[in-house]
Length: 250
Image (cartoon, rainbow, N blue to C red; front, side):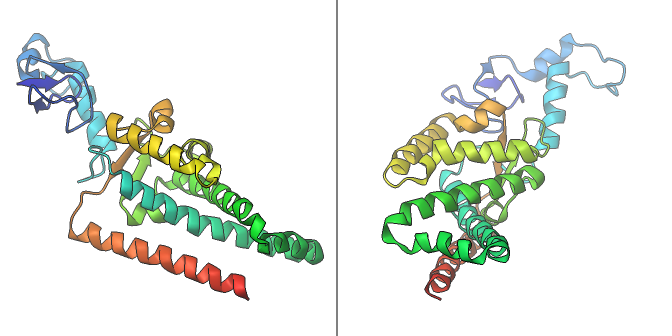
């Protein structure tokens, strides 16, 4: 038996990562045995826990949404949330740009958007949609911690202290996902980047863009309610794509 150095959770000797907080450093001594070495300090309200254990417990109580988990990661739910967000915010962003462009210079706008009707421009269309979707998604996540896809599929992004990451950090994070995870939206290329990101998340419990800024990602526990939300999210994604195809034929 060994114990997590961060949260004090007991773990089997064969475990490589704490199931509660994801920490990879362990100790052979129980936190309860080490508390005797520390006298109560002023403002501790009589607690005899070591300062580092007190700090860890107070942080965990703050940053983990009630009932939500940080590990093990849920790569496929995160990917589904990403695709739904990119579709919704990408189409919404393009619509807002089109409305603004046509209201100012309708002839020029007609020429610009007419380019995307050519089959050779489909890759550019995909890249621009994903880029615009990434900007808006990052802004929404930075401000609220959630987005449409992340709320439905049960994902929340916070900083290391459990606070909202902020508008600028949110946009920067999603641009890194756009480049490193989605390969700029370029077909074939994104297969390699997605595989690399999935492997990194599965093995290390964190992506490169979250590790750099110490962002933390929590997920809603699986259950009948979450399974139902997953089905709803997939249905919304299908409806969005059908709707956009219908609009493009008008």
